[in-house]
Image (cartoon, rainbow over all chains, first blue to last red; front, side):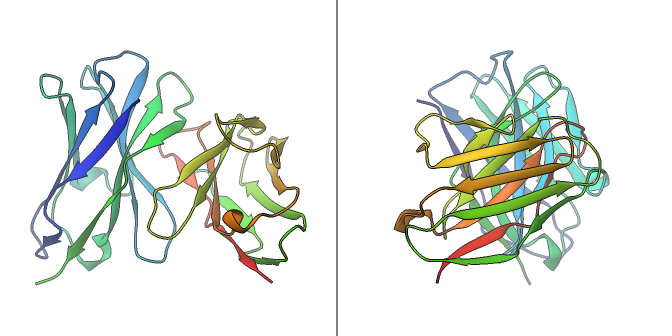
Length: 121
Length: 108
């Protein structure tokens, strides 16, 4: 059974770079059937898609975050990563990694448990 | 960007009653619409995809309908474990993928 697990610092200082990793187990990240994405949720608020990538390295990002986001994959470790630069308090959120069906319609069907990242000095 | 609007924001329902949640898209998303359930401290759980197809293990009391811009999630007889926040999500036109603001279903 597929499992996704986020990891990374729970506290990041303003203006620094947030870095998270999603470890995938129970399935190969190199499967051509899926995208691998990041979605976040500020405390008490709704869901915001950050971006997604294919195992080959092609990416799609939310235009609202595109200038600050990098998603990358390490197929040898079966994991993918998120970097968000120049963070502010508005980036405080639970960050989820998710599997998305590839093709034209990327349904998010499996999610990690999420990890809270707080931006504060 | 397709904006997803959910109504109502909060729905107060008694156990055993029917709950009807609405989701409207700012432009057509065909049937590429999903519903998720989220309980406190948990990740969203996929309930419905393709507007009306239940995910594996989802009870039959959950049903989805609609196409184009107007969608409905119906819970036919609310159980205690169904009190949660529900989000609709369009995956028809991206980037960006977008979600509705959520409907909280609470005990009346």
